[in-house]
Length: 137
Image 1 (cartoon, helix red, strand yellow):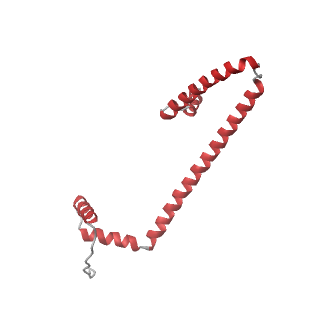
Image 2 (cartoon, rainbow, N blue to C red):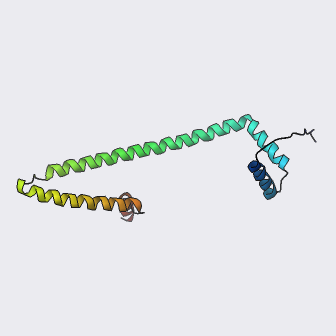
Image 3 (tube, rainbow, N blue to C red):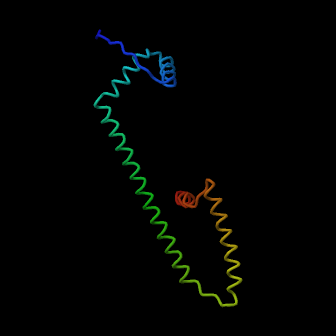
């Protein structure tokens, strides 16, 4: 059996309580837990493993951001094309109909904002409906 040195360590009450609880739960000696933790901390592989794990997480985040950017660009293009087509196909209103159209447009806009708010706060999103419709065909 290797020679063991005694070491007195000070730690906060919270950490000491967590250590005692963990040792009791795992039925391990506190000294063994502390020794394993220090060995892991001082191990050169430990920092390499942490760095590799961090790199994997960062890569995943970058891929997610790339997908979000692609999706946002696609949505902006779709909205732009729709607006261009709508403006091209919609004839201008006569001067007499402007006030009525503005009033009706304001009502429709408020209805649109209310619908958007409901959809964004709920589980049903248009993109999910479109995907589900495509899968059901």
